[in-house]
Image 1: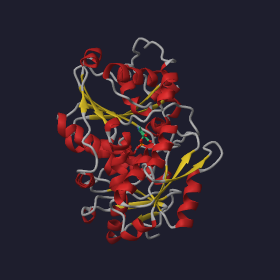
Image 2: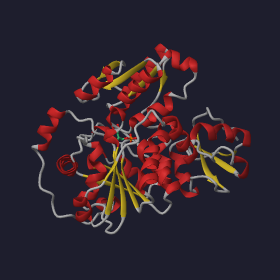
Image 3: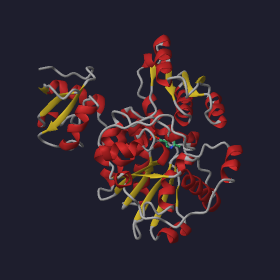
Length: 411
Ligand SMILES: Cc1ncc(COP(=O)(O)O)c(C=O)c1O
């Protein structure tokens, strides 16, 4: 028997006898074996729950002392209450971004579509929400020493701007081939940028070394409860503004935005189905979702740079398994067509990752006539010089194909 603690970092819960918690026992069983992380009940509900814990190797079963459970609860779960608290912290700091509609899209899809335009968020992407929500909660000593982040771009800018607003020094580890516009903006907000080669160097290794050497607090781009809660405020705002939805489409990289938005939808629009969208060339989250075990992808060659993350996180994966209803993928050509459509018809400057959810809709991969559909446009930070070249490659939309579930595609 082994006692489990918040810091042990190697155990996973496999069964809950009284579910007041967002985990389903069958799914938890998989997570316990494969991820080796601990997920428990919401704070305050632990006394009603009996827990069994299984070691990563699947051998030991442990009953967790309730005092222990509470400690872990606080460390690892994200609830709608966390999103509400995040929304309060962001009030007056983040923009309440506009929701746009298009009769062209409504006619084309036969549904009522609401675009939540996070390309108009501060720093040009939803990432400001999570970064600010995490940084504003740091202790004085952590603020004084500073924050470190690694990011393909938008999280970097979000940390840099939040640091400027909160007077916290920031250091950002970025790939040397990140879009020039993102590198320049990050430096412009006063952050120190340390670059690495994403084909040969480990950004996590470099970030951890820098954080250790300099005593900086690392704020990861998606796998952090305060980041997830902040990102979820995008969908919270959308649903509070337009009312309940039948469907919510959200792009997915590491899953911070998707899991946060799914928590919001679950609370505010319980019958809403949430679908995550990622590039076919970076389909690790879709494979993970269907396999119920964490799958990875290595340096995927996709124009959607925000979705090049190697895998979902230890926090975002179980949240997605529970709260998200489906995952779909879109081709590179489809991403480009969606971007082009949004620029030309809605006059929205959207970056490739920001166009993923729209692509799933326009290509007919998600096809729900009559439905009220929310679409998160996650960001608009695109190098304008590159955009010209990209749009020269736009091809005609093929006839919409019915969606083939991922599992069938394989067989
Ligand atoms: C514009 C944009 N959309 C979506 C994502 C994916 O976000 P997440 O990692 O939370 O899934 C990113 C990540 O960098 C991004 O920059």
